[in-house]
Length: 223
Image 1: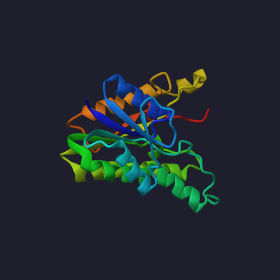
Image 2 (image 1 turned 120 degrees about the vertical axis):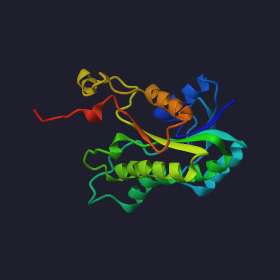
Image 3 (image 1 turned 45 degrees about the vertical axis):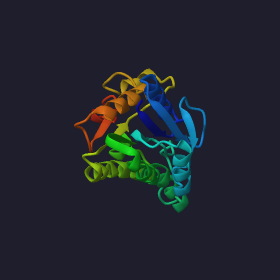
């Protein structure tokens, strides 16, 4: 049985990933502070070196096939840059980028030949709304970390990223769906499908897979 660790497994995308891997017969552990996902819960604050080490000890696995670095503060708006506190900046960077570093460092000894890491970036690594500097920097850092790790860890371990666009399980207006060339906003299952692909795509590494229904390819002009 293949084994996977998903950070942030209690969040919207994390729950979708855990559920899909479980349905495919994987043994799945969710590293999260909350315990309301479908997978085995291991309490972990990914920003804490000690917490990450304790979580791996509690898990007790001696081998791993897949790590998905999905944890991070979900809300991208951190306020105007002139009033953004250093504490809030660091918290955003730590939950996304430092957490991915700490988890990857701990997981690498367990990942065997053919193992895979998937980092959860965002289309906000490539485009922005106002007042999202910390989030954009964190997600952009994950894109860069991805290709750096792919070079350092290959060929034994492949490292890729996913850049989701608008992903929701809520009801949206027709005009919200209409912004997407695919005809709808994304669902958690769309990202889970991409994770499953990257877990076994043996000739793909160092890449960022954009899953956004084509939204970042659509030119938008003010009426």
